[in-house]
Length: 213
Ligand code: B1M
Image (cartoon, rainbow, N blue to C red; front, side, top):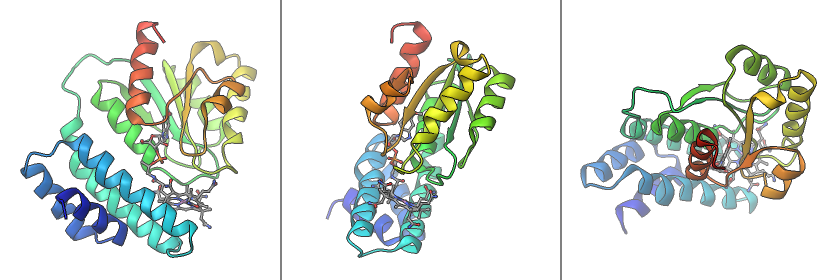
């Protein structure tokens, strides 16, 4: 079994101590963080999602696997930290109201920071009023919203409408993403952008700042 497969299996099992150790071992052997994230950590979450859907795993196991993934990501975060001093732009990001999934949002925030953006992370379960208040207070170039549940994606439209009502919509570019979001949905609710993954979000944000999106 490859090192990446071993790491994936440890994350699925929620074996945090050995998963973190394996992450370090993989780095020591020269594997790059992006490969570890895509081929072991995200791949593990896909397996967990499938097992949950088929009734093989339950919420507590899903949570332990998620915490294990986050512990591994903490090891990787310093390695993708930006070395640029000048901010590439300011981003406010959060997971929408009633949604507690934050791994994907954290990954997007981490990669944006790595690309030199100043990121203010509002966390999870963020209500429309809070997004609007932060846009008003911090005047970010970009607002990012994440949602993983089909029941919480409609919150994104509420936020965009609330920005409009507050007269702030034209001042900020809005990008949405997360497993429950599609490009069509993003377009229909009036978002400026959508990305299927963290790399896509960074590329979109960079293009947004240079006006070429
Ligand atoms: Co939940 N859960 N969960 N869960 N969970 C899913 C999403 C689910 C698909 C599992 C399944 O049924 N197969 C399902 C949703 C079904 C649906 O609505 N269609 C589900 C469910 C049902 C639930 C509960 C309702 C279960 C229950 O209690 N009965 C409950 C809801 C709680 C709530 O939010 N109110 C729940 C709870 C949980 C845990 C708390 C146990 C845990 C989350 C822990 C945490 O996040 N801290 C959890 C987990 C871990 C998952 C799965 C297994 C993994 C999610 C994940 O982290 N993926 C998930 C199944 C799956 O997605 N395969 C599942 C890895 C992550 C890197 O991917 O977040 O998609 P993702 O992010 C990607 C892209 O989407 C994109 O980039 C990221 C990196 O590539 N992206 C953006 C994300 N945000 C973006 C923003 C952008 C741009 C791109 O711009 C701003």
